[in-house]
Length: 204
Image (cartoon, rainbow, N blue to C red; front, side, top):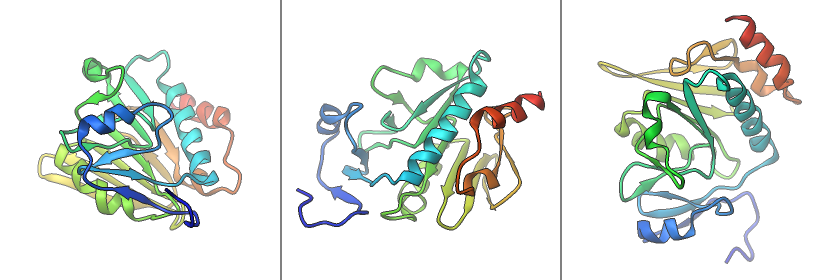
């Protein structure tokens, strides 16, 4: 299917039914289901480093607190019969943990984090962000390691607020007490998650 294509590339297969997607879905599947299409984005070494760093940091922070559930990519978030995106990271507050099923999250998360892929760095902002807003997700982070900035959108009574941040402290509103220094994300070698976690816990 991919013969002759040179990575990085974004692969889209249109005209797919939801039941077909879930028949394919699993830990080994690289597809996500967006607007009735199967979409596969290439993963780069940098993307995987950032994903692992943030997943480890978030899970370690909420461990023992019991105030949220963290899931990594390859876990669908079913919004409707045409949309089951798989954010790089998603967070669900404890009062909504009943929506976390064995195969998928039944409804929107409270916080999603997307990391731009090399094949199409603008894909998440262009294709997924509008649907995340429509679903009313309270907090959305789009991390762009190529432009070295994080786009943050948060839901308010009047709509979404939008801000971009390239450096400095960035705090979550969904997981109180959790923050990152955005400059951590741009380092050639990412900092130790243990040392970063100690900084976070030192603030509590």
